[in-house]
Image (tube, rainbow, N blue to C red):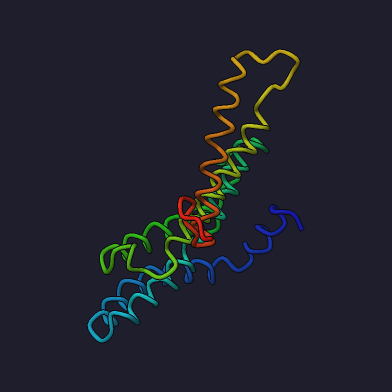
Length: 175
């Protein structure tokens, strides 16, 4: 199943997806505010669950849209479906906004791992786009040191992303 076939299949259930992506930020704000009064610990767990339920589809749709623009070169004005393409991103932003009103991101369990995952997704997409757009020939039009510096920076950011996902700090060595 291709991404386009998956989107066509999901289009059949657009009312369900619209209800889902509208309900997640609303329940985040209302449920988080109610639980914050009762139990701040349970409120943070609710916020963590809601953030994961909104951010993962939102980032997935951002990657799909960027893929459609940069790799497939589709015209989004003709191909974009508002419920499937735009609503997950708006829901993600609204959920993150609602969560920041109730608790800082540092207090939400697992948010650092989510940040690491987002960093890895972004770096992977950037690397694929760089390889896709780059002309690799016999002559490299910059100094070789710049290429090594670019590779070193990419590897440092990659290690930082892996460390955040796995909750390991790259500067601390166990031994």
